[in-house]
Image 1 (tube, one colour):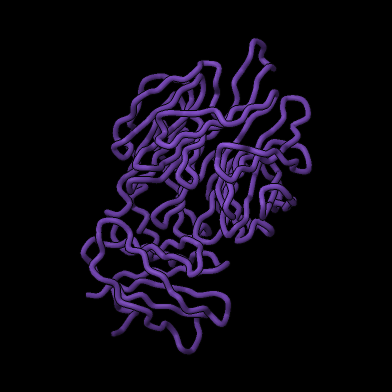
Image 2 (cartoon, rainbow, N blue to C red; image 1 turned 60 degrees about the vertical axis):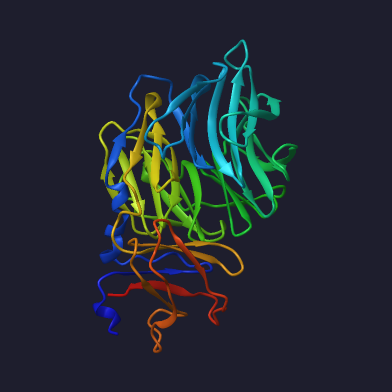
Length: 396
């Protein structure tokens, strides 16, 4: 079989390498070419979105939550106390978490909040502290970790850790300045905010990392073996371990507020209707969606949901309907690899331990006809180089 002549293929690197996407494969992110507005009534801003247990949850100002149980097509409002301002909502290790602050009787009187929910509908308060804003929850290395900022005076930061999502313990994060988001991957936690990047392996002890150049970072996600952070001025940074960061070309100077990943695609969005997507976190495609100002992104039910200005939510097209295979890695031992491709099509999986090596691509396994969702496989063999690249080749 002459691999060069096969019509569709794509490859990805495991371990600490970035996903690599040839220009000919970038059309595979066609699901994010189309966005449809799903809510239109003037409302408080939404600040974040998450997906879990078959349900989207978006949350924002004045106690506003929107819930969708049909894949982001229809949304129902659920109002909490109007003094509550949600900053983040996330789904981590089987639980939803909503974080932010609750205002008191004066503008500079508030207390931080951290709520949890098994279903996104019924919420329980788990932690509060005066003059504090809680911003984001991630799960990794067997624990939950949230970041919090003592404001408005010192902007000192701390981490909140928990083994069960119910009982939380505070630990100091060195330095001052806001941290707006947190992500976990490869048993590492990374928190970002402004020109700060903090890294921890246990959620209690933190070390700073230096971003390249001036930064105003807003959000971070773990995607295909690397952390990806986005921020003001169209800034996009990537790092495999959270220690050394590389600036990527986004093609925009717009404020980027959110980043999310799923189905082998990472999507970033912010002001001015700008939506960016990438199959590898390195090369980015820009598109414009009139009226869209993003503050939160989430992937689930084969679509991305973008939440933001005036309570609006936009829904992307279905990702699995796109032609061409896409590979996505979930770290583990061995790592789990998800293949998204044409339903009913069959693919050969091939690997290489060094791109351009004389032995070229080697056969790993043939996959059965693909179902509607991703097909998951693993490679139990280790690579002598510490890196391994995979590609999916469509069988005619």
